[in-house]
Length: 463
Image (cartoon, rainbow, N blue to C red; front, side, top):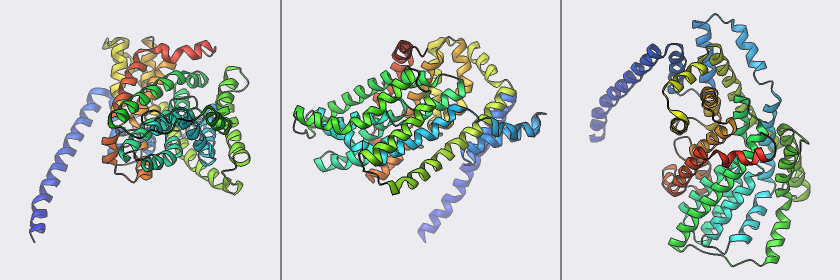
């Protein structure tokens, strides 16, 4: 009875509060429309549709259709044509191919051999198994290109082993969530491909540009882990002999050879990044089924089906984002936004700071692919006019996406780790904080030290 009375008292207040919030949002959106002109209308429509709970990809498409149909004279047939021609780019084929390669590597025993090799190298240090997990994530990221796949492949093996050794589950989960984000920073990376397509930037240069930042982040995450492990006296393993290290390396070398294939093939001009993705998929299939033999041939259709489903989802997002880019180009919105930003006299440092804040905020409500597809065409023209290199800008965006993967409410790494560890998102959010702060420091370094990203692609002749 008392519960019913309490509910009667709460419900009207909740409705009143919801109505007030809705009225404020409508007022803000109307203000954006009035003050921003066509730019304001486009983004107000997009935000309004997203607030209804519609997926970002559909919201992008509906925004284009509503604006084109009601406020322009562009033939609707042009929109239909753009749906088909917008993704007729050879580079886009790299996305499903890297997804396929990552799935083969995840199921093919490559991860556990990389973990064994990393453990043999540094398992005897404070927090050795956790450090080995970070190193293994970095090695897997060199050949995978997906953050979620890295968390699944390494986390599902290393996290139970850490708990068995006596590490707190929160500590192990924090390590894996953040180290897994290396999957989109190191050599192949699906977000890099999407950025390259959105801004006409060299994919090969972007691939190589992420190598040194990835190594730096690996070292920084290891440093944070080592300090925490030493402070709390977490377990150490017995030091492996050089013979054991050599044996572990020999077992993992087939997976590591994929790094040589990708770097060597692109830098020597043997194949394009898209062809490198195809080579990666074929090579991953061969070593998973015929060399390591951890994945039976009968499981291949299942892997193909999962890869096709994920590829279809990403390509659907890209298609709608292409429409959105077409709308912005038709209405001259990127140039108008660039002019507005440049008129603020922020300078390079101020613009980069503003971009980081904007992307970190976007990471609270959108996943990486959607953020890049919406934001890159808007921010890229301003960055170029300020003299910021497109490759450096892409790596900075990539680093922002890493942070977004590791915090709620849409951090994909959190949800994957939650499934592995059986911990709640709120527990994982607290657990990940020391490493997340480390990643924010890393973001500042990447933002204001362009040479870290640009030296290698320039040295290899890709810029």
